[in-house]
Length: 380
Image (cartoon, rainbow, N blue to C red):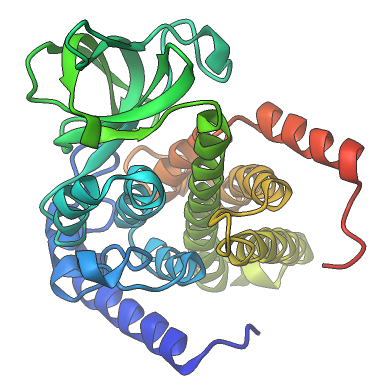
């Protein structure tokens, strides 16, 4: 077992009590449609939202490892609430915390930690997903020195619940990021898509959207490197969420295997089921270990996880969650295959982890780049 501090054990215990007492009855009622607003408000009221954000902005001042413990604990009960915690701890708000002006931090982060505000992130475009070089969204400087944003983004999650988004765009000197608010003149929602697990993803246009200097996060020659560091935190968060889904499915498989009887005995007594459970446990524990290692590799001068550690965690957890949920569904048989069953939803939810926050193929490229240049570390 992990050697958790007293504070971390208290966090896990309190989060587990909250999830089981307050979230369990509503779990699996959203299934991607809508947002667990009541749960997020309750987390904020208890001081459990934005655990890794600074205390001066209402956060917990804790680490990303602590967020991993929180997401796992909540996700074992309610995966949709765990997904919301991931989005508001490890993605756009984390980038604002890392790179934002003092104005941006003071303006956005307290609203995030209080549950008043969600912030989306816009990277993908119709012709530019993993290949950021083909990005056509731009920020240009007018004659009066003001900055204006133009372009298009798609597959953006949580837009209906968000008031603002961190947008990746090309400046004259290279890639950068800015904060855009959805109610600004020039922002037009084009259409909403519904993905496989029921989540809304949005396409929108931006035409001459004014970006004050205080809403610029990064620009300049080092901007791409800085953004990639922020992406490593998103990949860690995606790994945390994937692990929580795996654990949710695993818990359900164990319970069902102990209760379901065939041939006058629980199916958990059959060697075939026991081997499935053993393989699932092995995969989950390996994925969790890589995730914890990646989260603990952050901080310090760079304030970001190691690229190799984050990529290994992201790839491992994405593969593991799909395999674990599939086997959990197999253990449930026809029951788990029915629409409306939690395993059917988890199966659809799990598949997205191999795409979001960086595809499997991009993670493999990242891993190969590092090991060809530096090899694997001599010690863990």
